[in-house]
Amino acid sequence: MTADTVGGVWSYALELCRALCLRGASVDLATLGAPLSAPQWEEARALAGLTVHEGTWRLEWMDSPWNDVRASGEWLLELEARLAPDVVHLNGYCHGVLPFRAPVLVVAHSCVLSWWEAVKKEAAPSRYARYREAVARGLHAASRVVAPTRAMLDAIERHYGALPGARVVSNARSAASFPPAPKERFVLAAGRLWDEAKNLSALEAAAPGLPFLILVAGATTPPGGGTQAVARSTRPLGPLPSPELAGWMSRAAVYALPARYEPFGLSALEAALAGCALVLGDIPSLREVWGSAARFVDPEDPRALARELRTLMEHPEEREALAARGRQRARAFTPQRMGAAYLDLYARLTRAERHVS
Image 1 (spheres, rainbow, N blue to C red):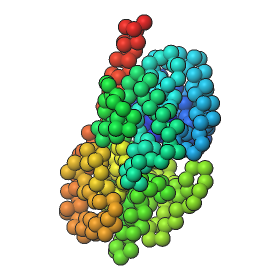
Image 2: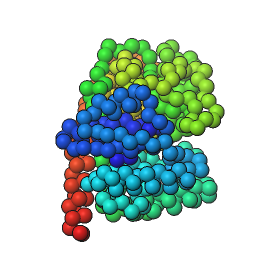
Image 3: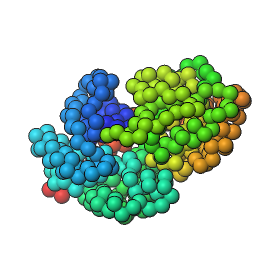
């Protein structure tokens, strides 16, 4: 399995690895992107049955990544030849076209073209033509494609063509990792402050005049450097290890994610497990996951966001009822269910491979 060490893909991959290892599988996890942090190494080393192979090549969605994509592909082929896995599970696209011996599963977590469409309200510019071609080749070469929501799968097929046999497998988080605690009078958000998709700038616009704090956890500088996001009306917490972020979620009354683009929304799932009432961007993927268990606001309307946050903070019974619905909904997205779905897919792929052979 491959994993990007930046963002939610790491949390998804570790949760899935944990579920697979508990069911007796052995997993070799090949990481790409930034080097693993000390907390990430600690989390990975705690899993019996998991072996980590660390790589630090640039990711396919970064600027000018193609030399690194080629080098990391050669590395992955060498790993597969040495390890002889039953299935290659890729949490990226471009390497799907490589001549792996084992069947290949590609999971669509996000993509530049759908990101650009949702955030910029226009088609991605021509400079992403090579990216578009490489992603399409990887998707169509894969033995099977998975997405975490129907909305994300629809977006992928709209941009790269129909993918027969593709299916949806929801992401998951362990409820035991996000226990609720007595709630305090503040709103929490988490995400990359520089990412226009997370739209945490809407909280900056909504915060003035609200009689409670809005705390924001997450990186303020893009990978590889760039302009640092500045928080003026919200209180930045910086990047937090998962256990520390879980502690903040357990105490927060409301979790806000006014996203313009979010293929699944893993942080919202974590917050709901921790007993937060959810206020989310009104986009198809988040509607699909949460239904009536969250409040939705137009991502481009900070005033509506401020009104919704104020309403929930000023009406505790309403807020607690919403939080209870959210937690009940969140507890359906279990690692056991996710692990079983992937093991079923792996078994189908290996049976199909034996049949062809």
